[in-house]
Amino acid sequence: GRSYEREALVEWLRRNPYKDPVTGVASFEPLGFTPNRSLLEAICEWRRRHPAAHAPPKPACRPAVRYAGTADAASQLVAAGDSETRQSAARALAAFCDNWTADNKIAARAAGAIPPLVAMLRRAPEADAAALALWKLSREDGNKVAIANAGAIPPLVVLV
Image 1: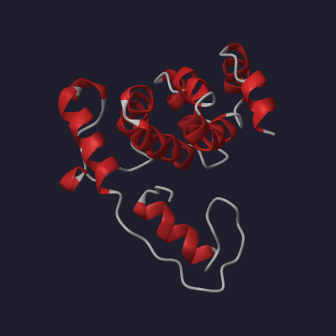
Image 2: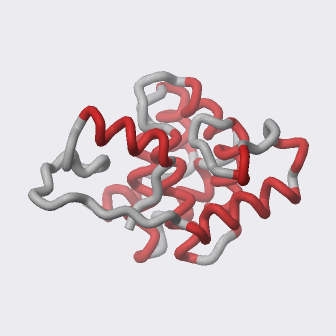
């Protein structure tokens, strides 16, 4: 499965009923959703350990991709979590960067998200989530350079 910020997902589905948010492909059945409790808990734990790195959490420590702290938390989870958590964090970063403004993409780069994502490209179960996040990050020119400098091109070529 994929992880999305609830507000962003609701807005997407309002504008694009029954379409997958990643592929845009229409589904003939209503889409089902389950809260990603492990990612929520991991982000909340990271926030508790790094209080100076983010704005105060929203009620119930609900992750919000438009929150600067979430970019930091997700980039750390990509680097340090178990495989499933790294994949969820990479998808959260992709959602964080899934818009055409540069702010979120620059924040993710500044939080150090690119090197761990490039490392994930070399691990088969994690490569797709990492490639998705890097693709979203690459929509900002400075990130294109940082992604190439981090060595992403050879493993991305292997994926295609």
